[in-house]
Length: 143
Image (tube, rainbow, N blue to C red; front, side, top):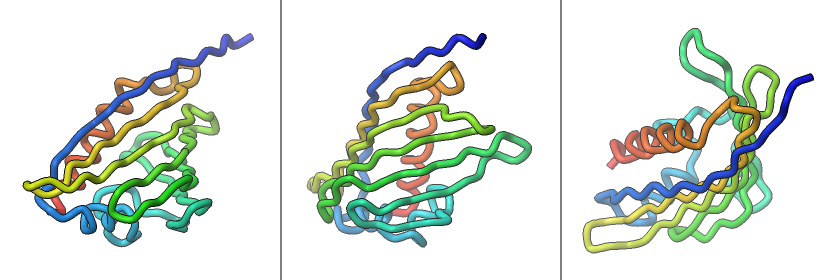
């Protein structure tokens, strides 16, 4: 019998980008722009209740299935979504994410907060936070 367990965690990653909040927000809202720094979506319905779905992974590595649902969208200010992450036929986590876009004198401060349930050791909060930092650094290269 396999022993199942869950690890709950919250992490926050902040970045400041030299661009207006509308431009940073649009890099999440437009599928072409988003594909430049995130996986290319197979389904992209950027609306409350809409779905974003993609699958992929590193060369010769496992395939990850990302399946998200948008919960709240306030243009140029906030995105809230929930998502499942699966790999090799197993659900490895379920999360809620809040992305805030705050206008500053230097551009836009982005605050990314993820609250997750990580299942059976298939993924860890530390690994997810690291991947999020890398992802947000890729986003920053657009500006």
